[in-house]
Amino acid sequence: MFRPRITAAAVTAVMAAGTVVGVAPVVLATPAAAAASPCVNDLTTAQTSNNAAIAADQANDTRTARTQNLSTAVSLVAALGDCLTQPQVVGANILTASATNATAVVYNLLGASSSALSSEQATASAITHALANAT
Image (cartoon, rainbow, N blue to C red):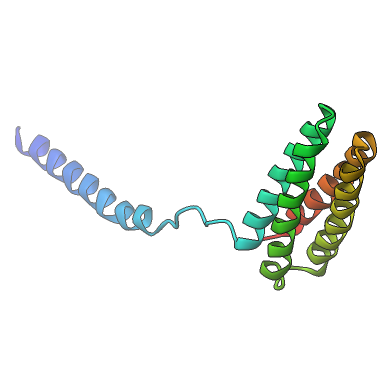
């Protein structure tokens, strides 16, 4: 009378143990989230500083905007080197972002916030397109 219950309990325990043993290696073998590439990191940094430049120009603060433009330029130069193995569209967008960012620097030197803002928005668009294609 108790034998079928003991046998059923033993079978259930063995199946549970087998499931844990069988699933555990699969869970352990699951790769962690891949770290972002140096290219993506550089572009993200450029995007952050460009967004800060946009905010500064919206507040008519050309000095802060210019500083952020220069930070964006440094990140874009780093991205040029780190993104060499990326699709050509990434490099093309980095060059576009660099050109429009340089224009924003000049406008901020001249104190023309609205013109600089337009260039910074073009820079933001180019960086966004580069990020969309970078791996």
